[in-house]
Image 1: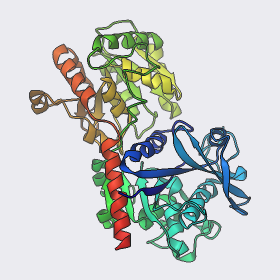
Image 2 (image 1 turned 180 degrees about the vertical axis):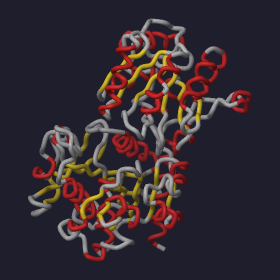
Image 3 (image 1 turned 180 degrees about the horizontal axis):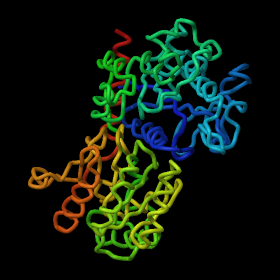
Image 4 (image 1 turned 90 degrees about the vertical axis):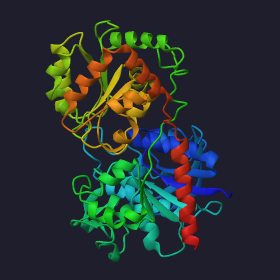
Length: 482
């Protein structure tokens, strides 16, 4: 079986730079594809953190003019990953996050920053490097969406193109009068191109012009073809349903492994579950909660946003706490939500605790010490936090949406009778009912223990998804050769 060469294009990658689940996927999928004989090189913006991770990188190509200044491609390896970094100081050498300034607003030149990433990727796809030419360009989310567009409009030989939707809500929309400045041809301004309601949408470009489209769960692939879930793209996605596929995400089961996780107070596995109690006690201490092994410890590890449904948790906080549960919150996001949870912690000392910010180590400790994880998302393309929870024996209590519906087996009567339940699903708006069901099951320790064992037996690895991506790449290559 011949090697498939994939150039992935992403705006973040774990463990180098991360703001969300996109980075986890971009970092884990290339390694999972290696046994499938797929060799992945990932192109990233040359943020300071990326360049710092590649001190021995070699220049392999120069762009004399890249939206306001020169740029070069650097090739190197970091964290076991083959990388190409677009070193363009005028676009990326700045403080703050990948998308926002230190003060919070989006960088005003984001259109040019991520157009540069797409333009460089299309150049590599077109053969600008003497010793490397990919078979596939794989664009992740809107930040990479122009890569398939540039490859399409260049007119010459090009690789097959794939766009993966990680979250349809983020569409990369910019003023239409930037079309020529972004080096897009006039014909790109059409319903079949990059135009979207009078603006340029980078994500629309990828969805309209890629050979294949994937998203990160089968249920989300169905939801986004409806007016309710399509966020304006449902018509386009219905028209392209023949090339759209939902492939579940996985997690890196070497990094997320309770038997070897150095972040934990005590490592454990399905045969040494008694050691898990040490992590619960440590987590209760960390969040200032009463040290009570008999209390159901619920937690949230999430961005604190409307999408994630955390306002519903605040709205239902009093009746949930009346169940006698404890609540631990880890995340950052909307100021109103942060303030609401901070006030709840102050009003309920020993029962509610919060940690605001991004803390990877604490996220591991949460998964190891919680009894149940709340994920009340209004929509959820896949979700990774519930996969980590399953791996660590924390039972997910999730809204029935997207990948949450695909990855958690609800503890209904049939599943309990069959011995297959791994968590609890609830309908949108029924968070309190989900919490009540969790509390009722917690009072049945034999059932809870059996569900915990089921959860830890789930295959949440990248092995099966990687095989599906490899098959998709090979099918696309064969179709283009036919």
